Amino acid sequence: MSARTLADTLTVGELMSRDPIVVWPDTPLSDVAATLDRFEIGGVPVVDPDGFLVGVISQLDLVRVRASDELWTDWDRLCARHVMSDPTLTVTTDTPVSQAAQLMETHRIHRLVVVSTDDESPVGVLSATDIVRSLA
Image 1 (cartoon, rainbow, N blue to C red):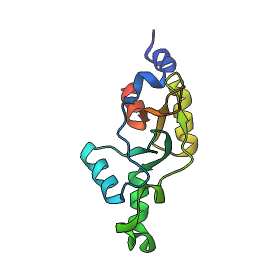
Image 2: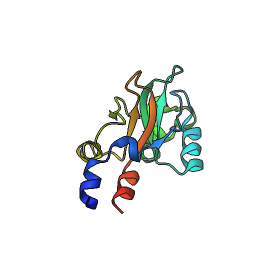
Image 3: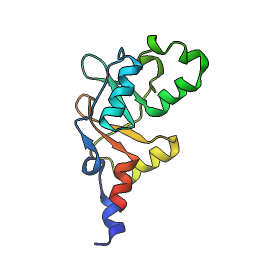
């Protein structure tokens, strides 16, 4: 089987990072920034107390806060819920990687949250880095 054929048959579940690091809607932005830095990741799912996905917050969201004088003056009072992306595009483990890549390109995003088909809670994250690694 050629590398191209193999790449065309991959599913999200084969490439995703499992057991995603998550934050809550009321997590202060300084804690979100520290989490992204500590784990060297570009974004995290935001979940409610029951573990259900309510959004995603990324490094770029934090950069946007820093770039806005109005938001920056409120940095100490802002939480994930104030700047997270919602609604969040999601995929499941059986989604073809080619379809996930098209979603990322179409919506100009760098990661997709992978959700359980049972209750739509996050089970992983597929990042652009994961896809590039599969191509190498």
